[in-house]
Image (cartoon, rainbow, N blue to C red; front, side):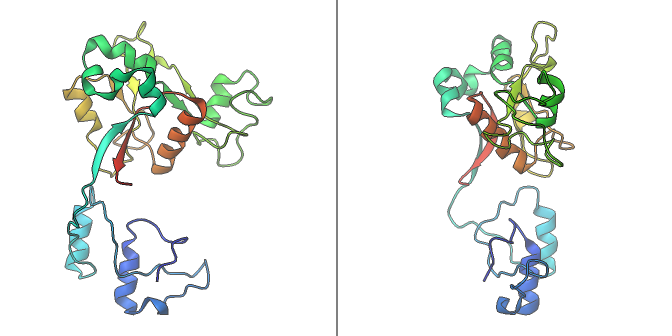
Length: 236
C-alpha cells in the first residue's frame, strides 16, 4: 500500500520500486528518512510534457502506456466568482479581446506581490509595524510567498508598470500561467485572440509560477477580494 503522506504526484520511482520488490509490503514504511514510496497502479496521470519520459519508462518495462479511462480533463482560464459578479464580460474571451479591452484588463488583473516585495516596496515601515496586509516581516525562506495567512501576510496585488496604460501603450493584465515543463498555451491563446494579458512569474521559459505559488496567489486573491485570472484544470 502507499503511504500518501509521503508520496508525490507522478512518482514514477514508486512504480520502479514496486517492480523491483514485487510486494510493496516489503518497502520500509516505518521511517520518514528511509521510506520508499511503492505502488503498482497510478489511477490518474496528466501526461502533458512527459511523453518522452513515459516512452523511456515504457521501453524499460517499468510502466505500461497510460490509457484513457473515460474521464476527460480540460484546462481553462478561471476567475473567482466575485470577479465574475463585478464584470460578467470577463467570463468570455469576447469580452476580453481587442485593443478596446486592453485598459480594462490592465486595471482588473494586477500583479501578485510576494511578502518580501510588499515589505520592501509597499509597506511604509518595511513591515516593522503591522498593517492590514502584513503583520510582520517574513521569516527565513518566507520572502517569496504570495500568501501565508490572514494573521501574517494575506497577499497583495499592485499596479505595476505593466498595468500602467498611461505611460505604457502595451500595458497588460496579469494571468497566472503554469510552471516550466507543464503543457500550456496561454501565450499563444492570448496572442491569437488579441487578449492583453501575460504571466510574470519567475519560472524559466513560461514566466509562470510553481504549483504552490499558484495556490498561494489564488488564496491571496480570495483573502483580499482581489481579481485574479488563472490557468487551471478540471477535474482536479
